[in-house]
Amino acid sequence: MYDIAFIVLARAIHVIAGVTWAGAMFLLAMAILPAARAAGGGPWFGALMRRVGPTSGISALLTVLSGIYLFFGLHAHDATLGGWVLRAGAIAALLAMVLGFVLGRPAGLELARLQQSGEGTPEQRARIALLGRRVALSVRATAGLMLVSVLAMGVFRYVVALG
Image (tube, rainbow, N blue to C red; front, side, top):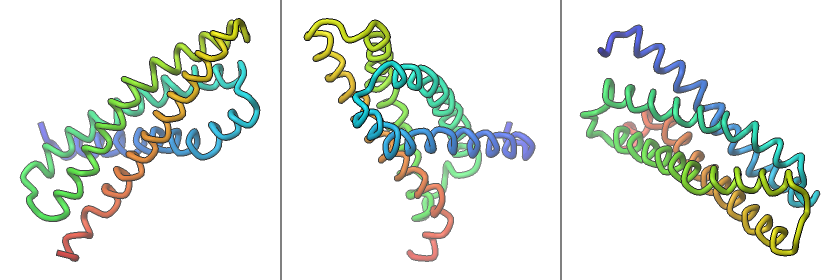
C-alpha cells in the first residue's frame, strides 16, 4: 500500500494540487477581491467565481486526500518537533478546506446566482453585499490557514535542528 511509486505519485498530486489551491486563495485574497470591491463586483466576478470555485474545491480535496495518504504512510509516528509542525500544517489545511466548503462555497454559489440576475431590489442588493462579505471572509481565512499550512510543509523537516 505504501509502495514508493504510490508515494511519488501522491507527492506529485499533493504538490501540484496544493500549489493550485493555495495560489488561487492567495490571488483571490490579495488581488481579485480588492479589485472586485473597487469595481463594485458585477457579473464578471460571478463568472470568475464559477470557474475558481470548482477548481479550488477539487484542488483542496486532492491536496487533503494525498496529504492524508502521505502523512499516514510516512509520518504517522513522528513525535519530533518536525512531526508536530507537520500536524499543525495538516490541521490548518483541513480547517481551510472545511471553511471553504461550509462557508465559502454556498455563499459564492448564491452570490453568483444573484449577480447573474442583475441588480434587482434593495433587498437583493443587501443580500449580495452580505454574501460578498461572507465570500471575502472565507477567502481571507482560507488564505491565512493555507499560509500556515504551506509554511509548515516547507519547514517541518528543518525545525528538528531547532529543538
